[in-house]
Image 1 (cartoon, one colour):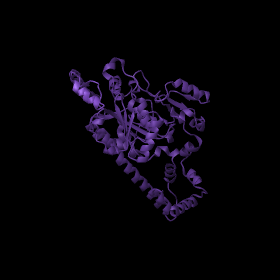
Image 2 (cartoon, rainbow, N blue to C red; image 1 turned 180 degrees about the horizontal axis):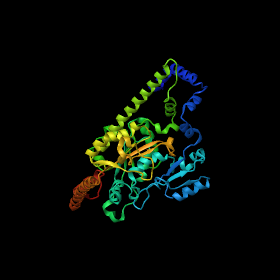
Image 3 (cartoon, one colour; image 1 turned 90 degrees about the vertical axis):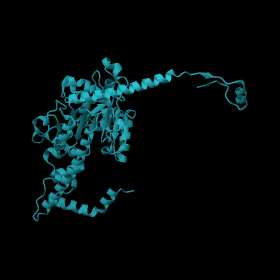
Image 4 (cartoon, rainbow, N blue to C red; image 1 turned 120 degrees about the vertical axis):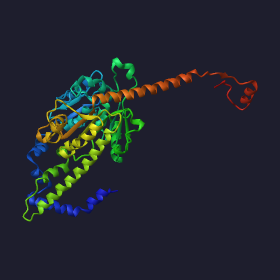
Length: 460
């Protein structure tokens, strides 16, 4: 059965063909491919055809315990790679941290051969873009004390990694499973072993679309994370921030719907947008009018996305126990990145949040003319058209001020102690109840035997 969108496209087939033929004639092109390639800027055409990006991956620690054995197999199959990235390091994995080893393959690696390997198909090696790994990494990895607050933030990060996390717009699930890998589910700090015993973080993953939610579940199952992820088919904006089930949430990853303008090399719609953005010369002005209309349509779409992005980020900040939030898009548009951050900063200050510097080793930062020099230096910008060897992306991390973090942690720890004390008292009361065996009398025994009943003693 056709979807409404498919029916609409079919009904407009004749009109679409006419528009395509008109543009091909004006550009003196024989095919749509030739038309797009001619109109693409040189720096875009180079990425698409001549200089593809390096292949990036991460080892799935939920399935792989011996990373060296996996690396050995890759080398035996002829792959050249590095197990430590220049900007992301190894991906956590410190003494008291979870982690996921990042692997950066050489540009000339056989991508088809790599994609067909058993370790990729069974979820042991996850082919995930470097940019796509940045949001979860920035949210949960302490960058060896180089983040804002330095060594004083270590205890706060330890608590964050032992608590629950929300993935607000989770499908298809790569970032969700990355969060699971980075949570401190397998190790504890020896100095606080008794205090932290039993703290095991889980991920609440929200997706409102039914098909995307099913794809999210499939990804979670494939990567062995089903016991750590709770998938909810729900709009994140409708989640009650005061719901008791989220009281242990200390961090939120927000990667909302965006234009995808940073993934131009993989998306036909983005390629067309780049191809059409410079306009066409026309004697009767028809070309300029059409191009202006297209730009206005693009602007309306981006501003509609921006509204949702601002609403979602503002909603995330209202969770009372949250200490850290990462906001990211696969867009290079200012409207979806710096403008969104700038518009939520007043609310962030009101709720005790401030921008935290992420990925200290990454060179490209935000636009100073929008955020100012100090805040622009704290956010990450990735632009493949300016020489970055990964897809276009933007990441900003909001973190509660250190003194606010301590107050929230202390308040929730006191509440935990009260709950534990209540449970202990309840168990003690139950253990103090005297259990007296009551044996049946002779008449009762005869009755039970006659009726086929048990002759075992009763307890109460």
